[in-house]
Image 1 (cartoon, rainbow, N blue to C red):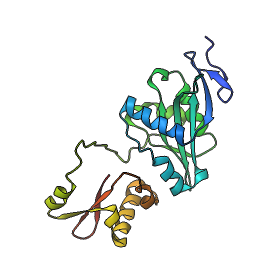
Image 2 (image 1 turned 90 degrees about the vertical axis):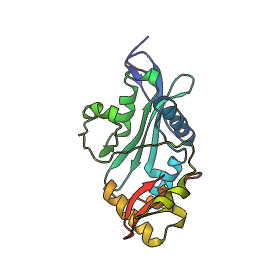
Image 3 (image 1 turned 180 degrees about the vertical axis):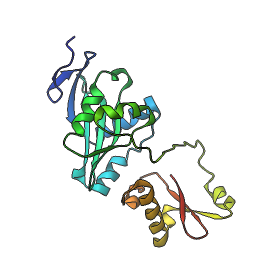
Image 4 (image 1 turned 180 degrees about the horizontal axis):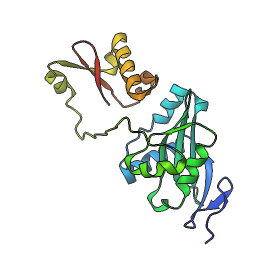
Length: 219
């Protein structure tokens, strides 16, 4: 099989001889990436994320680039959100059987071409960051905890002696202001967090201390 030949936008071969082609992706492609990333890496993404990002940052500021094989199956993809001063690269995934063949690197370089980029890398991707001209910076740590029987919220509210847990739908304007201030401090930017937590079939709870200071968020 030929290797490392062709134009990804017309069809190319990876260094392991896999044929692939780049496509500008849509919601269907994003849903496929979300399903694959959970199936293979146990990384949880809500199917509504793309819709919420477009609502929050603008339709034209969210781009998804995917690689497909001859059967037109999605084998990898990357998503970027254009923000005020930089472009954030978030979702970045290649199917396990196609990894280490150069397809992921091609996707990353293509979507970051000509922009100031920031990449929120999972820990196992950190060694690859320098190869893209990026510098590692350690900041937020994201933990995903999946609950099989998520019925304990009323009990949690009762057990918090010095804190209050409030669902997003019950937050007052002053409490939303505290949430947004906290999020800006953690993320380093003023994000439209109120829109971003508005996901279908999803609840967000905020935890406050007695001084109405936001201390945590449960999703």
